[in-house]
Length: 585
Ligand SMILES: Cc1cc2nc3c(=O)[nH]c(=O)nc-3n(C[C@H](O)[C@H](O)[C@H](O)COP(=O)(O)O)c2cc1C
Image 1 (cartoon, protein in one colour):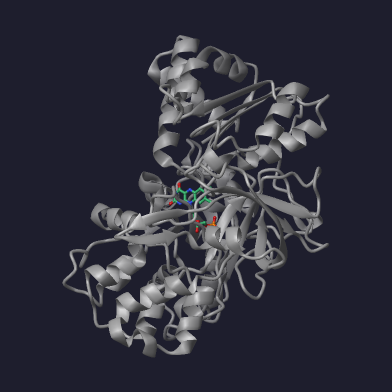
Image 2 (spheres, protein in one colour):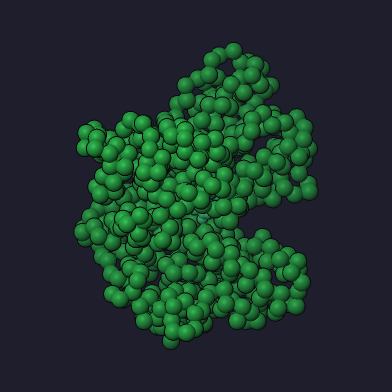
């Protein structure tokens, strides 16, 4: 072993997934080569780049194609003009992302990979791109990396067995993943989360230990999940926020926390573990095994029901399935292929078995599903006002697919489980979605539908400090004021009390006037620009990517009009506000 050689595993993670993969990589490399260290991006000294020998980076992509919070400084440094030459460094990059994000899918992995090469470093392995259900793909990439590293370091040992587990084989290897979707999108069945745009906290990252929760990615794994701690909360109360005549059913859900788990901040999120309904499991088995479905081993049925995400389709799932259905049109396609992505977006997993029947065993079928049964929601209350419980704003997901009535498994669970049911959750600190450090700063909150959830927490917190807080302006969209006015009483009270300086609601299905949030942004261009000019923080939040893109376009237009700027100037203006965390999108 040549002691002069050294490996740095650099982890850039926000919710702990990449950190977990980096830990697995460390555990795999260490038995062969001891001169290896694992560093979180937040702790990385950028001048060390010049000294690196072999750098293996595991990074997720966050926001809309942004680095994880902890890697922002590192990103700015390495992308900046003062980045050092890296001609003596060898590198490989593994990315974790979610193909639902379209063009920004694994953007960080691609950018870091390209940049290291541009700075003169030598790539030893093609960068990897893992999707939503990243675990298996990450293991495969590590498996490819090991012989390359051995060759690089001229090690003679055989490839060690990875110490990390192959998720599909384990019933309890739960990994938090997230999904969200509009109700009509069968691929992403449980809506509401992906508050895709988030406020950066301009303050340094603070350990969450004192808040009684585990900060993702900086603490040891617990037995079940990477990076964060799960515990049981009790389903305490549930009420409908929409009227009985509304097409959508939106609920307020209250979960009582155990006494030690009360700390969270406005903007934080929660993962919810749900059981799949027996109907969903039966439908899957029926489509996979036809009249032999009833003979499938009870163990497999139990794992499918209690531990797997079997309702969200992904390109990676289709790719795995294609090995059993080589005649399918997806054979040979990469996971970034648009045909594959489109199918994943519009078909639940069981449709694969319907459309491209394959000879597959129950164990093989089980191994297709690598993601665990968890969904992510924004917390809609502030702990400072209502400690001891969290509230969620949950739209019940339901849609028709080929004459079947499909319900989102998690939203169905949350909206129908009996009160008193213990529900396994974990709280995730969301450092990208924070109120400004200066209470006196104004805030503008732009959101769609149930994405009002984190803003409700913001408003509760700001109301508490009403005298010292800056102005609050809420711009939200929903369908119909008579049926879909979420938190009406609270918002009207805040208006009366002056907590809300302005409230604009765009009703998209009300009479002849069909208003959308992007129109409101344009109509209010001047006021919006004035607020931004005076230092306001702007939050944009929602899970409908097309609508968010329209809001962004309106924002650019609003800045052009009110600031009398060219498009380029307006885009630079917005980019600067994003850089300084005054806008997150
Ligand atoms: C708010 C939010 C924004 C995200 N944005 C992107 C994105 O733009 N592109 C992408 O490929 N994945 C995106 N993802 C998916 C994450 O990269 C993925 O969940 C990853 O496993 C997270 O890894 P981490 O826990 O190490 O941060 C996003 C996830 C969240 C919660």
